[in-house]
Structure formats: structure tokens, C-alpha cells
Image (cartoon, rainbow, N blue to C red; front, side, top):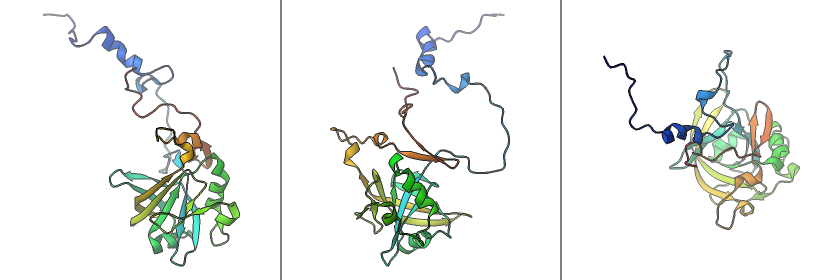
Amino acid sequence: MNNRKPVMKNQSKTGRKSAAKQFPKGHGSAVHKAVQKKQQWKPGNMVYPVPAVMVTVADKQGRDNIITVAWTGTVCTNPPMVYISVRPERYSYHMLQETGEFVMNLTTRELAFATDYCGVKSGREVDKFQELHLTRQKGAEVAPPLIGESPVNIECRITECVPLGSHHMFLAEVVAVHVSEIYMDKKGAFHLEQAEPMVYSHGKYFDLNHVLGTFGYSIRKR
């Protein structure tokens, strides 16, 4: 019987080292990480961090409002689609139902106070644009205004409302996007990171100051 170990013909010294090269110090593969002891909790939303966007809405009479939404994200690339989830008792809910439109305004470090305010103050009580000294800008395709101080405004038209429980999810198609020229370089590339975008996690707001890597960097040749 042949007791020799099989030889991997396509394996070389270079090949054995390639995996190590792909993961620089501090960014190793999961294989080298310690197994962590876990506790089982009751079911809950533990997907964090999440965006904290300021959503502008309007009714058929022309009244508008800003609501901060953290349950939001992308659902499709082509056609470009997003979603927001809103409680039916919120003041903005009837506006979403009436016009079927909204604008998703991305938030930044400078907009942290306004973002929080629009999430805890009701539009029944105050004009948030006036109170926060925010600028209304006219959209290209929808009735709700853009927030002039936001670096990115995403105009959306609702295609479906899905009652889920505590929240109703509004699926919407993106019909126009506006980006600030301040963060565009000479080649026309947009650098949102320079605007210090903000996210929400477990009741706290965080900015994103450090780029850890770009998409695909873990397998990119060095």
C-alpha cells in the first residue's frame, strides 16, 4: 500500500501565500478569529448600524413635513427601488398615502441635531423647516420638497404599501437623484464620505470618518 500523502499538483509556494497576502494585518479572514460565546435573546431587530434619513412628504393641500426614518434601505438595482417603514399613527403616514411620493434626504454630522429633532417632534405641532432653518428646494419629479442642506436627495414614487405589523413598508421607485457639487471631484466622481455621513445604532448617532476598505478589497490583487 502506498502511504505517501497526495500532492496537490496546482499548489505552489506562491499559491499557499496568496491567501495571507489578501488579508493585511488587522483584516484577517474569519478562519483565524476566535469563536465567541453567545447568549440567545428574544427575537428582535439587531441589524445595526442603519441609515438615519430625513424623509420629506407632502399632502394634497401642499402642507409638508420631515420625518426621520431608520427602517430604510435599497431593495432593487434595476429599476432602482428603496423602501421606508413608517408607523400608521405617525403624522407623515397620511401624506405618504395621499400623494404616494417622498424624498429621501441623506444625513450628515452637521445634520445630526435636525435628524434627531425630526424623529421626536411631530409635524402636527411645528413646521420643522422653519424651526430648524432648513431650506426647501423644489424637486424635479415629485411634490415633496428637497432639503437643501442634505448632500443627496432621492426622489421616490411609491409603488406598494405593505402592512407588516407595527410598521407599514412603502416600496418606492427612485425617479430622480440630486447630489451636491461640493463633494464632486474634477473627474465627476462623487465623494459622499467627505460630507461625513451619519448612521444610527441602538439609540445613538454615529458619523463615518474612516474608510476600512472598498467593495471587493479583500480579494483584490495587491
